Image 1 (cartoon, rainbow, N blue to C red):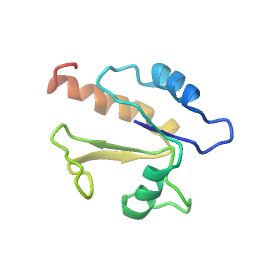
Image 2: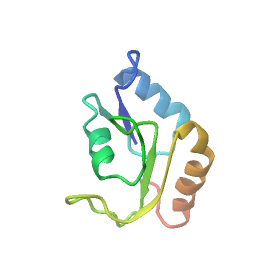
Image 3: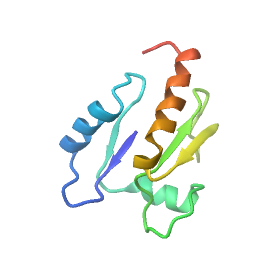
Image 4: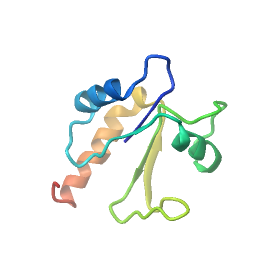
Length: 103
C-alpha cells in the first residue's frame, strides 16, 4: 500500500497509524511516497479514469506472481475511492490467505 502526501495534514506518521488501523494484515506492505511519484505514474499509465492530476485514494491489487519491470503485471482488481471499496479490497486481500503463507 502506498501512502501519499495529498492533503496538507498528510504525513509519514499519519500513514503509519492509518496502516495499523485499516490494513493490519502482515502481508500488506506499506510505503510512503511524499512526492506522489506513484500517483503521477498511475495517472499516466493506470486504468482508472480521473480528472485529478494525480491518482490517489485508489487501489490496484496485483497477484503474487506480479513483477514490476516497466509496469506491474497480473492486475487482480482496482477501485476508488478507497473509503467506498474497503470491504471489497479487504475481501480480495483475505482471499490470498488461501494461496499464500503469512510472511
